Amino acid sequence: MNRNTPWGGVPSSSDSDQLPLGAFEGAPLLPVAEAPREPVESDAPAAYRELPVCGEWTYDTGDDAESRGGATVIESLPAIAMRGMAAGRAGAASGAVPGARTSASPDQAPGTAGRPPAAARAAAAAPTPLRPVRPPMTPRIVPQVSHAPTPLPALDELKSQHEAHPGDGKTAVALAEALDQRGNIAAALGVLQRAIDAGAESVPLRCARAAILSGRLRYDDAEAELKRATKVHPDDPDLLLQLGMLACRRAKWRDAVEPLARLVKLDGASAQAHFYLGEALNKLDRLEEALVAYERAAELDAANWRALKGVGIVLDRMGRPADAAAYYRRARDAQSG
Image (cartoon, rainbow, N blue to C red):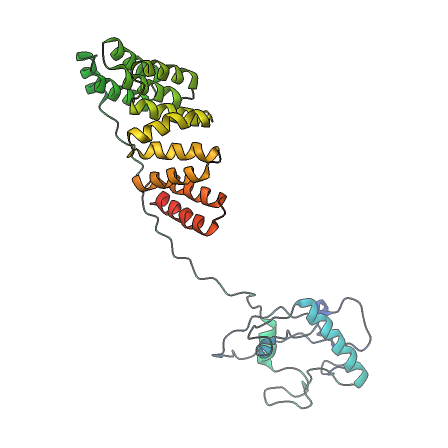
């Protein structure tokens, strides 16, 4: 059989790689695609196609975009192969070859009737990208954030002042706070005790010692310091606040209510007193009183997002989710601000 036999058999120049898996009777095979003699130029956008399978050209269903809601679908390789096999069986039964031309067109050489045009064969043979190349991403400019440590008080100056006036309570408290920030807890407690021994007012110094001990979870030692201060001045506002806060930290809610309620009567402008009182009352299910305490704390300190959150929690518990959501949003804004 000569080379120009259109489809009567397998041409001598057929590509063996295009033979199907499993022979079937009457299936047409394509000859090897020849390179075009002249380059073909086109302004049309390139179509994204799959590689040819078993002598079939891929079918781009872009023309069916309107029927598919405007989405262009590319047939998968197995679907193309199955469709080609079905077409081959139908062509064998009817004697016609799918996609074959009945007469040669002007761009075809004599004896090649039924073969696709050179431009189509070149387009089918040339590998094309399966997806468009993504454009390079623009680098995102990240602002530089300064992580400089917060400056601490001048320790040497405070030490000099304390050495010169050991009985000065304010200087002792300031020096103890500076040492506490540096993690020197023993030295901070020693400075406060030295000031007490030197005759300084003991209640604020005992409260300062209790605050340092409570911050290190030494609750028993902190409570002992506050009890010593209570013997000297039981109605001191700072002492009452420290007693209420320590009781809240130890989850002794009933013990926290009494000193905090006394403090609110003595100093109604203490936002901390109202907040911790709201915490204790909420844990004791005294919701109406807790709501009043939280709201007052939020009025006195608009930046106290915990008080705003507490209002939301109580409103949720009272069955008012819409009002609670508004306070949750306010708490979120105050926290982020």
